[in-house]
Length: 76
Image 1 (cartoon, helix red, strand yellow):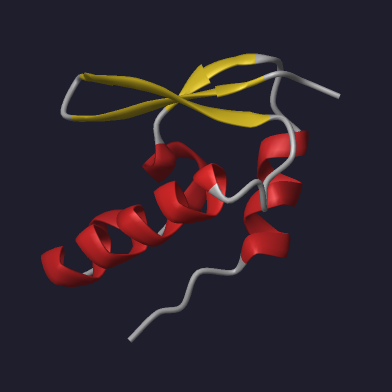
Image 2 (cartoon, helix red, strand yellow):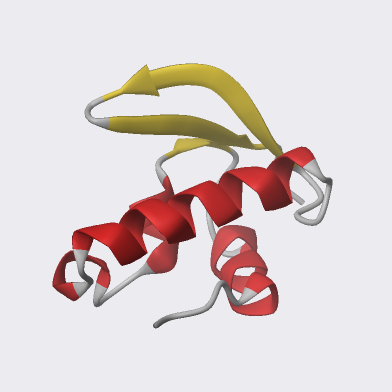
C-alpha cells in the first residue's frame, strides 16, 4: 500500500509555476496504475496534509473541477 511522501510531493510542487492543480498532477507517474482505494486514501491524506499546513504555500480552494479537488500553489 503506497504512503504519502510529503517531502517528494513538496519538491514536485515547488517546480511548478504558481496556480491551480489537481493532486494526480503532483503525484506523478504511476497514479493511474494505483488501485482506486489507494488513490482515494492518498487523495484524502493529501487534503489533510494541506489543511494541516504541512505543505506551505498550498491551499485547498474548496472546489472540485474535472473530476477532482482543486488546489492552489502560491509559488516560491
